[in-house]
Amino acid sequence: MPVRQVLRMGDARLLRRAEPVSHFGGEELLALLGDMRDTMQDMNGVGLAAPQIGVNLRVVIFDVRPPLTDREKSAARYPDAEAIPETVLINPVITRCGDGTEEAWEGCLSVPGLRGLVPRLRNIRYQGCDEYGALIDRTVSGFHARVVQHECDHLDGILYPMRMADMSRFGYQDVLFPSGEYPASE
Ligand code: NI
Image (tube, rainbow, N blue to C red; front, side):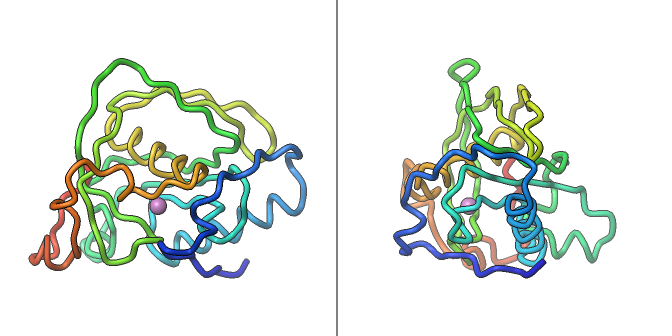
């Protein structure tokens, strides 16, 4: 499956509301997910939404594996993040659980080289389907909740800088974190 070009902030296709998927398990959807996985892995991302490769469908993937070696750790975008199972989430619905919010640093493959401090709901429930139409229903918190909120925002044309409360906490990663050890989102 080919690695696809990731659209960057400024491209109007990132600002659209994506369309729901109505047919599950088809060749086209499976091929899209193959391309999304390869693209995310190639860029060392923790998540990717279909609109980021120009496909206007409500499909996101995310996958956070704990880095096993020092080499993997230095290559990871979020080296200290908790693991999140590899997930395909289609037509997602997010429900807030309580009023808790928290701020943490985020990056985005569509906003390369930059990081920003973003407030998010601390606890959420998310529901949707996998690529075969099987229901997914999870209640999560912290980094997992943050990743899901970030990816699902892409389906509504929202990039993380649009969620920031304080633009003075937005900048180039290598300037904000010159040691190269930027904090994970928790
Ligand atoms: Ni993103």
